[in-house]
Length: 118
Image 1 (cartoon, rainbow, N blue to C red):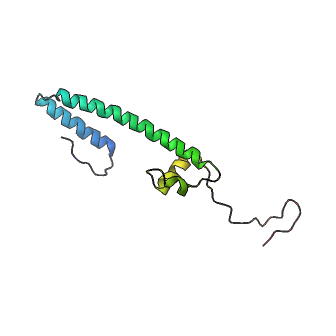
Image 2: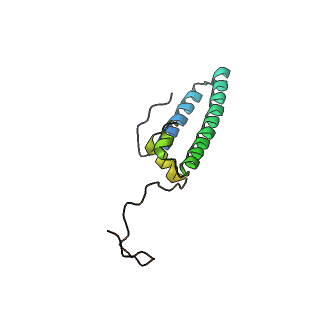
Image 3: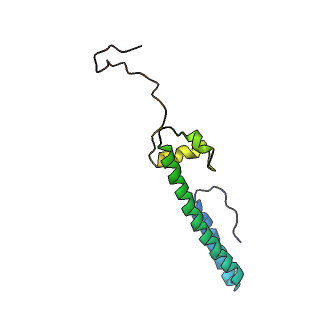
């Protein structure tokens, strides 16, 4: 009964309203889901919770590995179901610093008194 919703300003709220409207429409017709459908929905919701927890655990584990000095995003990318860009987003979310080496040398004098190298 749920209609497909494109990207709209309402987003998820619009979709929820449509689902709620569909349920109200069904209630007017005295429909109630079968016990089999109700059980399947409960099982689905349980599986979704387990999946969400596993995904969050995997994201945290990826971030921890990315904190290691010799592990790059490209290294981790080979073993997880996410792209380089998604892993960079995860790293950013968990505060993992970039691994890029400094490419610009300071023009300020070295604290030891040596002139800047150029």
